[in-house]
Image (cartoon, rainbow, N blue to C red; front, side):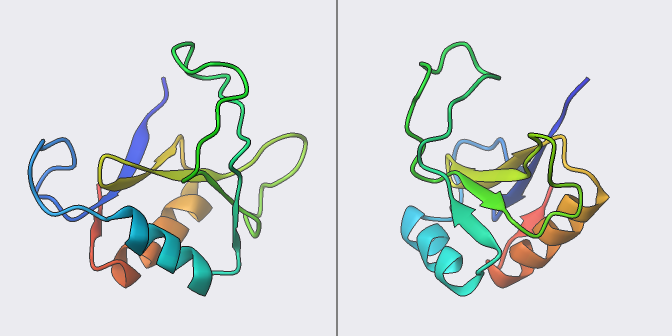
Length: 108
């Protein structure tokens, strides 16, 4: 069973209202973290509701992920004011914790 992690400024990441990480803040963060590479041509194979070849302008790959290879990538993206990752291993969780601190948010 998979799970999602969220970098959020809300009391609970799923709250419909509350402080958000804006697209501008996310893009600004990407300029200061050279280990993250934008992947706007990401083809979602996980969500059948997303068309093949869908463009996701907030998707990034963590290039320094220790487990990278064999087609595996550590991906993060901005969704509804939260930065998200799916099935994060211990290394990606550590990375997200550091990112949350810089973004004045927390990891849930």
